[in-house]
Image (cartoon, rainbow, N blue to C red; front, side, top):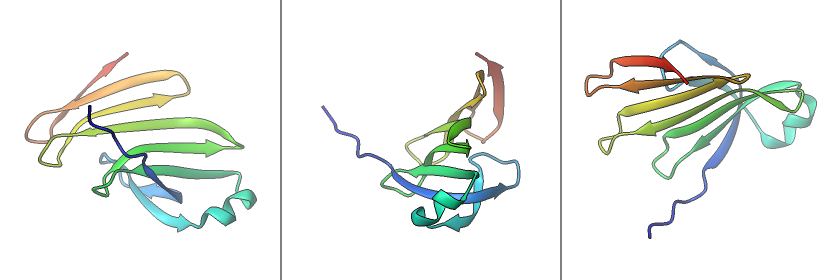
Length: 102
């Protein structure tokens, strides 16, 4: 059975654009988080791909993305949970996504 390494987490002020996976901007050092009410926590796999992204507001997760990739590194699926409203986007080989509510 293959073991999966725990993600490496990094922290950010925001993101830019609308394309998935989100493009995180303005990194924050972990020791600066206690002074922030809102920030993003992103988890990266061993290949440097973002696999999770959470918007933290006053200590609570307000938005969560989970990304799954094809063996060639292209995005295959995104699961988005926005305060209990869940959506899954499946991407074809050309990167075109189709969303469905869960």
